[in-house]
Length: 571
Image (cartoon, rainbow, N blue to C red; front, side):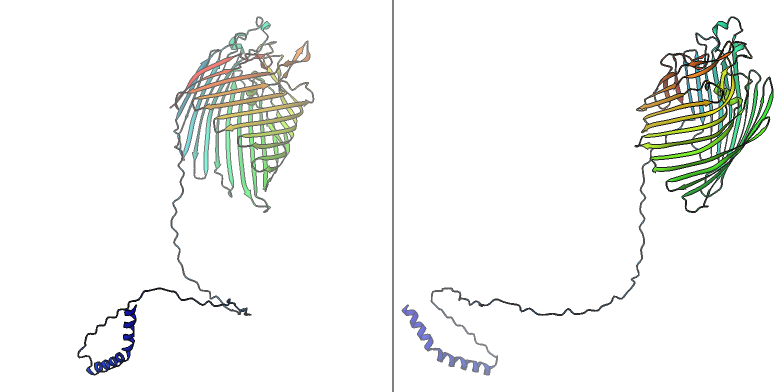
């Protein structure tokens, strides 16, 4: 401590001398300029303990405060100058979306189907046709089906042979089509009382009947165009003859026009259709030669407005045979789509005139006589209404009710003066009567993914005739059910049920008219097909599984259980 104090006092006492000496040195250095710089070294040593401290701070003892100020919002005016900046746009091409389509199914030109069944039943059917083409299409169909005699009914064999050739030529704006047909049906009049067999000649040729039909049809139609006049013309000729030298020549002409219109302007669619029909018949049998004709004009206007659609027109027909008669029938219909594409209802009025030709009558009942009376049947009015609906994705259902008034309805009754074999009563004559018909019809169909298909159709009839007791051989109810199931394209099952309600036959007992009840029947059928591959398959068909005898026509029993087994081949 002492040493420290001593050195400190010596230093402080030397300060004046050091100051004078320092000033002198500075002056000397300035006078010498910078010619010679002398080195200077000084060392100062301070010996003392070091104690770091922080000086105490003084805080401002007041809080900051902002005085409120009244500021006026300045008014600002500005404007935007429009300036178009030129730009260019070059769209980039977008690659279109594509859907991988299914491979086109291979078509075969030919298909043959054949088999054999009980009752000595050979069956053969052949189809031939062109492949896909935008220029033409043609095809051929040949068919043979026959069966031998039933055990309890001699001379009951029958057969059917048919040939159908057709073709189409696709032009730029039209389609030209035509076909040639030949059809031969053979039946026997086996519906007689067995007790009379010993009295009359019932050999095969005496009871045999054949119907031969040769015909052609040709048409030229314009391909549909929305705002163009669409038209078409079709003409045909058919010649039918049988073993009894009954002949019928039939020529027909059908011309139609249709065009979209814009008469009202407030509708969604307007369309007018005009049809001109003409049929000429020449009938010749062992009794007479008769020429008759039927000509008709039918213009119809169709209008669609939102969910409503209307149809109005008329049918004017002229019937010519021994006399000429003009028939006029109004045509009208109104429909509404209650739920679009799901539920619709309609009501309408119409009438028609048709000729009961020898071909039409023999197709319905091949056991009739060869000299039937042929008249025109006039449906004076037909008032109808119905509902069409789609239930979900797979069900379609419809119901229809109609009432009609008719002149000269055709019915078949047993002939008491049979031309071939007297008193056998195994042929039918045609009689006519006027009356009304109430007809109810309903149909329902189910289809899913092409695998399962079901359909059911039912009809109810109620006749009220002016003179006849019953509508002879007409049922009061009929029903048809059909089902088909495809099991993995290997097994195809199908079934059908045909039910026909009771009907009545007109008979005579000691020259007094009486009625005979023909019981209703159910015809149940079942079939299965096994597909070995796409070309080859085998099938089995069983008919009348109930093995019952029923009568469609009085005296004519049906075959009992019958089956057919065969194969199909496509090439």
